[in-house]
Image (cartoon, rainbow, N blue to C red):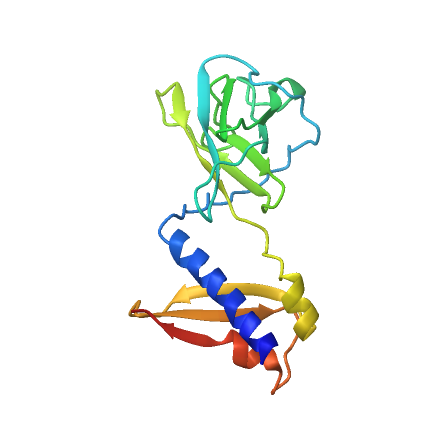
Length: 206
């Protein structure tokens, strides 16, 4: 009984944390194609030209918190519509998650609209590959980069007690009168496994 009580106590803490942050979420930045011109190890620099300034912040989709030290890779076509090493750069986000990158205004080519390729990686988050499409006539733009956290690790105590690993998930019921706690296991759970009775709960809110 003590083990089960400790498990419910841990679940309660998770539920409180989930409800307190439920309202503070950011929509992930949509992914876009990588394209055939990506190269590793672009040099660290904030400018590859003049005429267009792109800035924004790298954030977590979980709670909109800024992500410091994210690696942001940029590459775009030169004014002649060709890709070269002079138009590639890597920028690191600062303590507030902010970044700034300056380049020439990207041209359209081969029927494609003007665009800047972006690849963002940060520890604990899924790598984002996307593109920014400048608005005609504008010389500056703001483009926030919202990353999705990697799959949450199962607590050691839960893994040790039940011998499984997976991800905790907490959601509201359709009428928002209850919280639904579930455990998405990485391995099939047999009928009668103790985690089934612990991890599929409806908790009615006062």
